[in-house]
Amino acid sequence: MALVLPVSVTVLTPATSANLGPGFDSLGLALQIYNRFEVEEWGSDPDHPHIEVLGALGEGLSTGPDNMFFQTFVLLLKRLQVPIPSVRIRMTINIPHGCGLGSSATAVVGGLMAANEWVRTLGLAVPKEELLEMAVEAEAGNHPDNVAPALLGGLVATTHVEGKIHAIKTKFPNSLRAVIFTPSFPMDTVAGRKLLPANYPKADVTFNTGRVALLLTALQTGSYELIGEAMQDRLHQPYRQVLFPAMPDIIKAAVAAGAHGACLSGGGSSLIALASSHFHDILRAMQNTARAAGVEGTGMILRADQNGARVLNTPRSRIRKEVSARYGDQFYWSPARPGSGR
Ligand SMILES: Nc1ncnc2c1ncn2[C@@H]1O[C@H](COP(=O)(O)OP(=O)(O)O)[C@@H](O)[C@H]1O
Ligand SMILES: N[C@@H](CCOP(=O)(O)O)C(=O)O
Image (tube, rainbow, N blue to C red):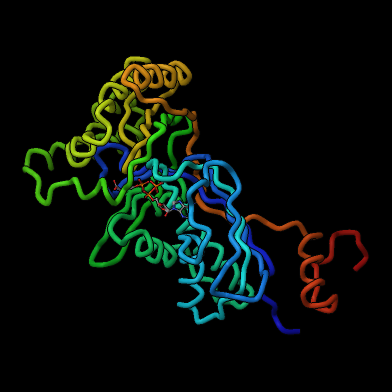
């Protein structure tokens, strides 16, 4: 019997908070809130997918062939020289986009994971490390710190070494939560990067290298009293602050309310505070301080995701129905269940 391609694949991809202050373009954390992408064979035009966006947070995302998820789905299939199927894509968007929580990374990683699963029965699936290279390329090519934790989960240190991406994942302490404040305005990551200088004074570089070292060691050893100082940054936040002048006051308010430390999340506009307790007080303090500066916003209290993007198993009954409808009953095979007599 010939192997058949799946008729549908569903992928969950976590939000991420990149940089964590001083780790500009090199540190990122996966968070327990997810975008869900479902791809199924549908229609007859591979160049024009049918894309449905579910959830109010998905408003404004492209439903055309330029959609980032579709683009990366196709990217991997083309690399593997697998014919592009005609598909319907359902995106359930729970992560606000343009707000520094790695929404574009979920689309890039989700597209690659879905395509990889699509070709698994052909024996063509590639390891996650290869997906990482492609994900960075698709995410403008210059920063792995949001796609790497989206793919791998946990706290990820990552960088380019001679053209190759290296990424090391460690477990993020379960005792810490991320308190996230997301203002009602977005900040475009690409535009924000254009505000950064081409060169930095040596003092600013050593300020950051010291704090990255401190942050990783503080997280590893449980020395949470050092996190506040360790989350300071001089390489990107001061320049991005022109787009979000209330940022330093909101960060201070989070720390005063009990957070160990706080910083801009990714390229903004969200702010992330790390805390062991007083989560609601911290969120309230961030919201009140923002409001006093004329900034409204929403909040979330999240645990770290330790596993990264994952493929969801489609229920056996649904697979059977879909395969039978498409290929006929003779193609359906299911492993025997204990005690079924088969
Ligand atoms: N879930 C998604 N599906 C498809 N495209 C997306 C998705 N999320 C973001 N994008 C694309 O990425 C752009 C936003 O990227 P960026 O500013 O990096 O935001 P974020 O900080 O949320 O990653 C959007 O304008 C859109 O083109
Ligand atoms: N290091 C990047 C991270 C961008 O993350 P995003 O979630 O805002 O896309 C940067 O600071 O530009």
